[in-house]
Image 1: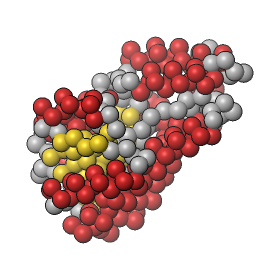
Image 2 (image 1 turned 135 degrees about the vertical axis):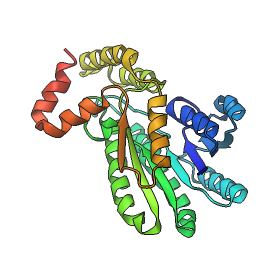
Image 3 (image 1 turned 90 degrees about the vertical axis):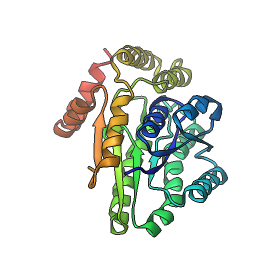
Image 4 (image 1 turned 180 degrees about the vertical axis):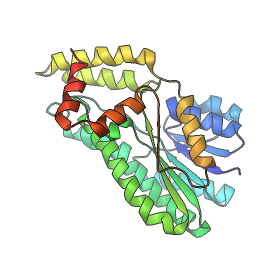
Length: 270
């Protein structure tokens, strides 16, 4: 069954690949992002382009109104917009921390609030929140990013139990390492924030490890296929994971005590 789908953060990385492939599958896809100039190529795949900033209420309201007016309803919201603000907690300016939460948490929450009345009215719908394996464990130097993903996971769990009565599903996707511009931006930010502070050595070690890991990261299609599964399922799983080290990392976090898991993470930096 073909769906009306809205994807945020569709100008790059996983979001762009989701938009392209889901449109090629025959769904009506609206790709939303601030950088609309980076989505021009998506039009060739049939993606409808929306200018949207998930920190700007007016643009989110306008985007939802555009979709509902054109299509009459909306079936799937994929909250994919997000970024990683890396740096030691002592170093990261609180203004930067607030913006991290604004994009990764409050933007997704507000857009969800805007689509839910339409989904309740039609008696069906699906909210897919793109979290991270970093929503299940927290490593050094990524505190605010991890905090945002932990929060998104918790909101998803609460929301799932609230909207089940209306025939609406809530799904969390937890990517591990995936090829995108995300990592390079996050590591550049890490060195800018903490590279010359008391945490400088740790930051440089972390950045070096992250750059090496990029070579092993999975192609975005791995996550696209998880989204496809969730959309197609009559009763989707509450969570899906995929990408480099996703399964092993989540398994180790589940079975290991905190301090043992901490030692495992820190050992990677030596």
